[in-house]
Length: 59
Image 1 (cartoon, rainbow, N blue to C red):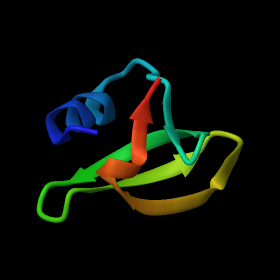
Image 2 (cartoon, rainbow, N blue to C red):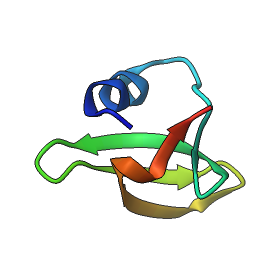
Image 3 (cartoon, rainbow, N blue to C red):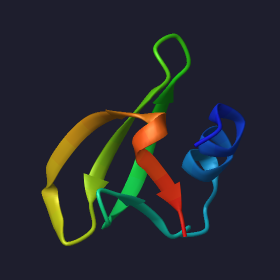
Image 4 (cartoon, rainbow, N blue to C red):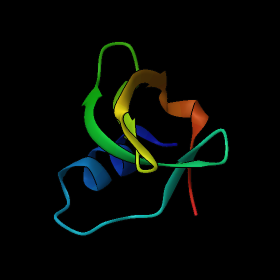
């Protein structure tokens, strides 16, 4: 995912359909310097990860 689009999604009040490894996620915060994003899984909110933006797909 492009960093500018990732920032727009993370700051948007609207829910955007994004997946990581085919699992729906909520994007919390984008890190510019290393092109990663803090996420949590919608079906497992307690499961949080930091993943490369390249892993995230907007559906």
